Image 1 (cartoon, helix red, strand yellow):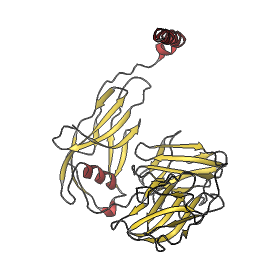
Image 2: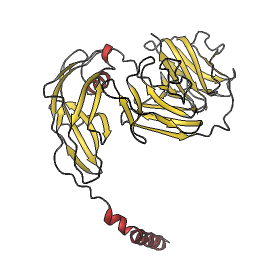
Image 3: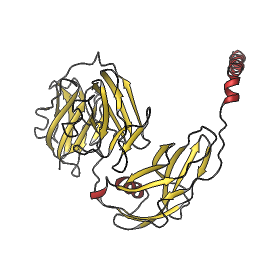
Image 4: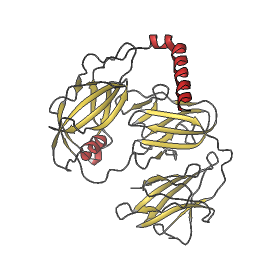
Length: 365
């Protein structure tokens, strides 16, 4: 039996080669050549980061394009490591595809140096470089030394709000705009599953502010105007219906795929738990909209130390929770309580999606 199986594999392999020989002969050869030069920041630049300016651009990193052969687009990773560590275990704080510059906010730079062990309010020296790669072919840029003084305190997580005539808010940037649901483990990854009208779609970090503004810079490629460039094109929703949207601000990608909601149950959603004002005795009801009957919202709730969950129809037949706060994804399968600690207790706006069990608590200052 083993001999027969191997023979079949060999025959298929010969067939594949014979059918694709022209493709193989015409395929571009990937071969790294030349240098990549990191021209910004300059050697010795110093950055004193603060929580007040964590959304502002701290530095625009600029480098020359790598060459891997005609027509081949390179991937770029921005790496940072403690000075003198020779990039043995670098931290990647940005990635691009083909693009040879990226604006890095104070918050992103702060996260990077903190991950590498920097002490808040104490200046430390780091090396940064660019890794250009296609497959197993790699070119490294020159290394640039910088000084960074990180800030202390809890950084408010970045939000991502939808705007555009494909959404309920229209093209108003402060009209109760619906947020995307942030991944619990990856602060740069966002999701939304729901109904969209035919029209345009973009994303904003802050309601009432047009920058940073995210849109399309090509099919599946996320474009951004951080306030120093031009606005990206809208993402087009050609046909009204339900879609799942994913946005990754680390690698500047997005996707929009159709979603079948025809069999989705209809619920009334509430939140309860000993972290809520009514404890486990009764639900605080959320509301939805005509356009999105599966996306639920609560304008304000005060959470204390304890646990909380979402449930449907004031019963425990369907309920959602997870071990993460302020965002996460419930499975409706005897889920754990969502934990609220002394550090996270406070006033929050609440969003919940019964199509995928995702939830989001947005701090109210």
